[in-house]
Length: 332
Ligand SMILES: Cc1cc2nc3c(=O)[nH]c(=O)nc-3n(C[C@H](O)[C@H](O)[C@H](O)COP(=O)(O)OP(=O)(O)OC[C@H]3O[C@@H](n4cnc5c(N)ncnc54)[C@H](O)[C@@H]3O)c2cc1C
Ligand code: SF4
Image 1: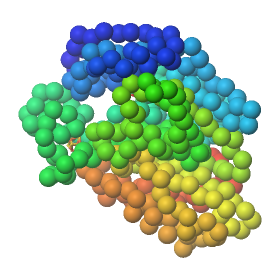
Image 2 (image 1 turned 60 degrees about the vertical axis):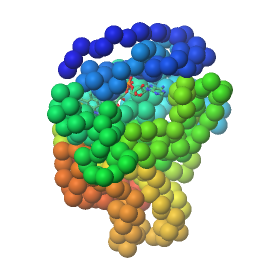
Image 3 (image 1 turned 120 degrees about the horizontal axis):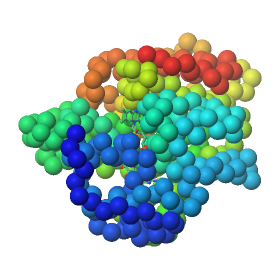
């Protein structure tokens, strides 16, 4: 890795000061730095200013809402998210997903906001500058062609975040601050399925917090497949939330990661009202297969990632149907 290029570091203490700092040309948010700094040291971007969000008042707070939900500051670390008694008690799938990110030293510094807003990844992109130069770069950064989908005019780099799918199936919302004021959107709308653009944030906007509603009748689980259980990104991951009413599925939400340029919601409406049986499992696997677009952006084969994604979905939905929130155990 190279030394960091010359840049300015600013450390605002309020949300509005951060908005002002991020409104300057070439400014970028810095949270735990576990995604951003290795990328910059590989020459993937050259921001003039890093806006360190860690000194903003309340940024790392977890607050209980009057409705029984939670408000999670963007600066909450993943280690806290994985171990906080309120999160573990009410939203075990979220704590589980946070605890599966990278390794313990990453989680001690990595934040919720940084995890959600992390860059997309590709074997032709997450390489040193000299490696990428030898390949003529690519259209995600500095080049004009895609090596994964040749002749494509968009980038298919993959979103590998673990926490977003768990939050989306739980019905979470994102709080955003920017030059136009504050706004709140469903978390799924933070993402756009384009590996280069990635997020729907406008210039100067940043994610300040995530609001999770009370779980109510929903039970959820998250699981991922990875090369090394101790540290790796998901080759494929899935979060499932189910509400059961007697012998029927009263609600079903499925969100996949590690397969597309964004975490994607799988359409499951046809299964609401059905019994969870072999036919339902097959229909769900088919819907997952149709939503995912696994391409050769990482080390494992496309076929393996497709199959493991479907198998994990079936496993989690089956376990939730039988009443287990903690369906998931780490899977290779
Ligand atoms: C070896 C290794 C393994 C990893 N494994 C995993 C894994 O298994 N699963 C996984 O999900 N990730 C993994 N990661 C990626 C990364 O460590 C995590 O996603 C981490 O949570 C990023 O958080 P951070 O606070 O360090 O973000 P940073 O690196 O500080 O920021 C990441 C990106 O988000 C932007 N950003 C940060 N905060 C905000 C905000 N509040 N609003 C808007 N934009 C913001 C930054 O500008 C940057 O583009 C891994 C990284 C490494 C190096
Ligand atoms: S998908 Fe194509 S454009 Fe995107 S990073 Fe990979 S090679 Fe580059």
